[in-house]
Image: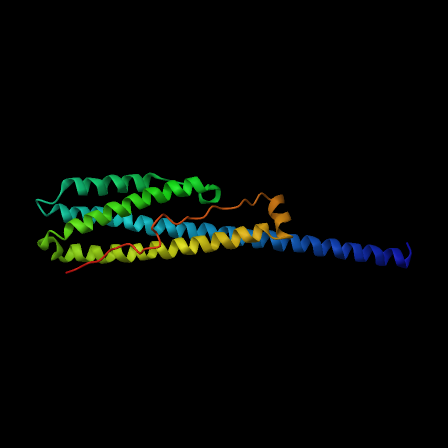
Length: 199
């Protein structure tokens, strides 16, 4: 074998090795971004679950007011049940599935808002320390929901942009990295939820 052939083989071999290492790096980067989006989704579920876990305590406290509207409480209980029953796989979630999830969560938010507005007519309930503590926890949870949804959308955006850019789109296509769905803003979402607590 001539010296020129050896140099040519070495150059070609080096290019192949660099290409393989580059593909490995791109693949691992895509996995990292995919996992970040999955982690962000887990946090979204975590804060929604926290809210769902607070509701039975809130309902029990409100039920202590003997003449409190039963239909308002039933609406909250029904909405909580519907919201916790919607399960989706974030890696394969379609925009329609995320919308169904969000619609169920919005219904729960609406029911909670009606409950908190109704409480205004019950001074003894508003004075209850346990109720006030639960209100503060719910308000904090609603804020965390907003933050975690934003974090999820940011992670999904980063992932989606990466799998669409050249040359990573080639590696993404080879290994079936699919575009992820975002949370969409609900109509009127530009207004912060009115969760005012007057004591």
